[in-house]
Length: 126
Image (cartoon, rainbow, N blue to C red; front, side):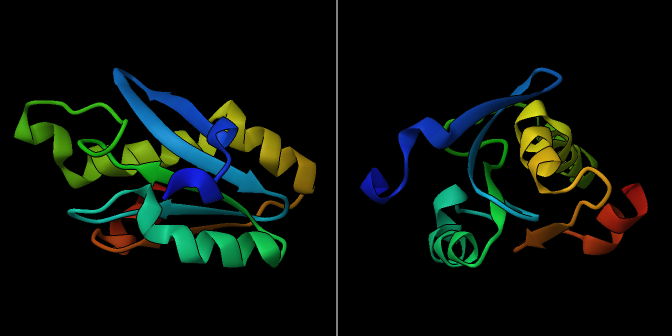
């Protein structure tokens, strides 16, 4: 399963007490992938390969509670605002900042893909 992806491209990104496992790869505008339930970063494997081949960078998260990302015990730790904060933390991390600065310091394109969350709420927070 993972042999097609470079293990060195997995990064630990902190969001408060949450450790996010994020697969980062490619060069170009950044696309952030957030999966729904019950999935993982690997859900996006086909899109990852396609986008990298077509000049994009990607950051594919294991959302909280999944894979190598922290698994808080309280249900309240999985509300939409906290899940959205994980995506924002990934977008603002030094790992993705390095990707974005390689693109163009004056123009950064970020596309956020969702399977199961509120795009309208995210738009308000950004």
